Length: 84
Image (cartoon, rainbow, N blue to C red):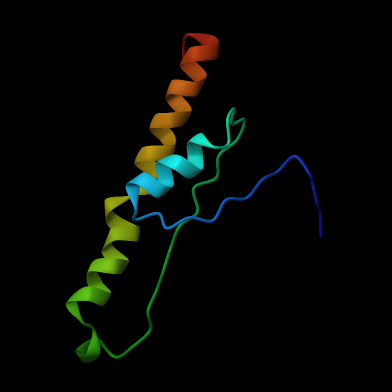
């Protein structure tokens, strides 16, 4: 497996805006960002609960992490290069 010490993966509950923002900001300068979030709870359709659905929807449809990380990245780039 290819390893690169300069790559720093971050694990965070992406539904939690404050924790996500703190994790992204703790990284400092970001050269490359990979947004890769997804969850699934496998169970029969008739057993799906509102909480289960809301949890999956929060990760897949609300896209908190993508909004946050792209916003932070845009601000980071603009502060260095004045344009995206």
